[in-house]
Image (tube, rainbow, N blue to C red; front, side, top):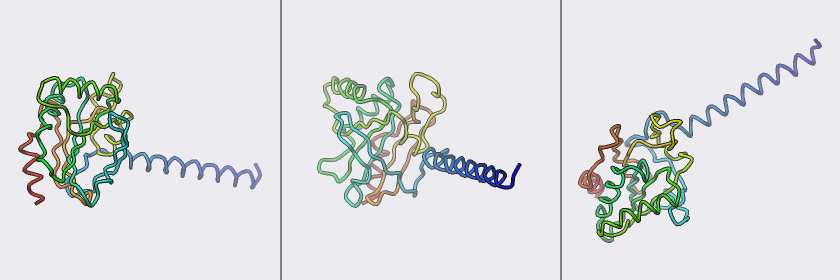
Length: 195
């Protein structure tokens, strides 16, 4: 084997190793093994709501506090109950926005909103955002591996984040038991602590 061939082979091996390292490092940035915690910067995102509108977390920067809810999906009765209760979370004219994220597509999110509104207590007054490829769920470290390979891939652990106007997480509640959710009073206390 000539020296030139050995050099080319070595360059190929080094280049392949660098590319593999670069891919794995990039992938680790996208999928956290631990949930985003208090005092961390909330990962930014842009997702579509059930009407197809683009909604970005960073669009509230400097203006609004954000309550960010991750729910399991349209099929989960505990999620439907939580989302129904969240209709009464915010005060009128409060500088807070509420966003809810799941892997549900637009149609499933609309069906869930209609189901909740059918209780006669009003429609959902916040955005249901679709994360069908669970990229944001992964970025927040909420992916529940118990659902890997099943019908609903990418299901998150239920979680609620309060994110200040600067994009920092100031309160978080991540549940390992999908039947347990923070109350509106818990979330309100976190919001009141910002004033």
